[in-house]
Image (cartoon, rainbow, N blue to C red):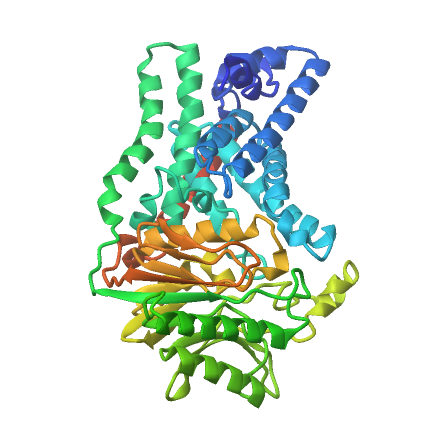
Amino acid sequence: MSSSVTSAAGSGPSQPAGRAEAGTENTAGATAAAEAAAAAGPGKRKAAWLLRAALAVVAGVLLYLSFPPRPLWWLAPFALALLAGCLRGRRARAGFGLGLLFGLGYLLPLLVWTSEGVGPVPWLALVTLEALLIGLAGLGIALVSKLPGWPLWAAAVWVADEALRARAPFGGFSWGRLAFGQADGVFTPLAAVGGTPLLSFGVALCGFGLYEAARIARRHPGRTTAALAAVAVVAPVGAALAARPLVSDAAEDGTAVAAVIQGNVPRAGFDFNAQRRQVLDNHANRTLQLAEDVKAGRVAKPDFVVWPENSSDIDPFTQPDAYAVIDRAVKAIGVPVAIGSVLAPETGPLRNTMILWDPVKGPTATYDKRKIQPFGERIPMRSFVRLFSSDVDRVRRDFGPGKEPGVFDMGGSGIGMVTCYEAAFDDAVRSTVRAGAQVIAVPSNNATFGRTEMTYQQLAMDRIRAVEHSRSVLVPVTSGVSAVIRPDGSIVSQTKMFTADALVAEIPLRSTQTPATRLGPLPEYALVLVAAAGLGTVLFRRIRARRAA
């Protein structure tokens, strides 16, 4: 970061001289550049605010650029360093506004795929809501930036904000967490220690530490405090390097040959399943072709096969023709197959279900998706939302959530089902591994979102989950990108988009639980408490200062 950018970003609000002499917290964190801007006229103060606002948006765009499909993970700390320059020393209201602008610059391009097929209204509504929540992070960071060692408090505030966004509103939306942009990064092993919260914390701490180290070194070269600030940069990197032994793809329980099927769809967009029987036939036919390849010796025979989510939108329990098509394909390949289907009971909500289909016994077990996507698989406040978009009526009948994790016994291996959207939620993946999954399967349907970046963002999530829980991850997708991921997060093979294909690979089976798996949400809770302690300290100081005044 150049010194001119750092100086402008760190400029502060005006303060009465008496309060400055009293040394209250509002002026304790002000930099020399901020004091100069405060002494300037209203025009210069307005120009400084506009510059900070523009830099906040630029910081958000930089963070977006750090996400897949671009291999620019290293941009994330610099984006947060620039954000820190905008927020340090600001008042709460300014922090909220700058955080909101940062969120818009970040999420407008990151989530543009949500407008695919339905227009800009859902996209803009989602981005605005999420950016408002990031505005709360900006508010909190601005407040704790007045404390000694503020990068630590600020990074904890960031994680607390991610925890909030993962839970509210409507069950939360975890997309866009810092951790999910780090699949190729040096910080990734932290996921095996404390899950995605610790990984996000490490990236945030490094970014805020970068700004603080540069700020102190620029104003006080050689000062010990600059060295201490540099620790905030070095510590996350050192911790990640120390955690690398936890990232292993060694086979603990032997190996298995897995196959994932990508049957493709007749068309992209929301009408991908307008020819539902064609989608089912595509996946059945690609499985039959795999059986022929096995018979001819062109590929190894798999121990089990996984189809994508929605590979049969026709309920095979009520439609005999769908049952026959699936049963024929499973018998041909001769091994257990997990089928993604939509079950339509006579009463109650629909079920997004994975069915374990045995070549001899037929369907033997099911798993109902537990994290149901709001405004995609269910419509909260339907009558109100209809005022803004008639596309809500595409979902004529809501889906209902399952209650228990699903681990299928497939060829003697425990294969845990984490259906599509669930991969974004820590508890959904963790509970599946703790229920005995030796391999994680993430059957997905991305046909709705065409050729957008959504597919690659989700694939990066799956890679982080592989490292977090030290499990192979299978990703069968209706239209691509399907992939086989090893426990160290590396991709063994992947398909192209909108092609019919099958991937067959030998994968390690693992049962050891990482510290992240064992600790569960405790690291996140601890970081939320750190954030609360920092904000509580600021509040206490303000109350004490007012009483003294």
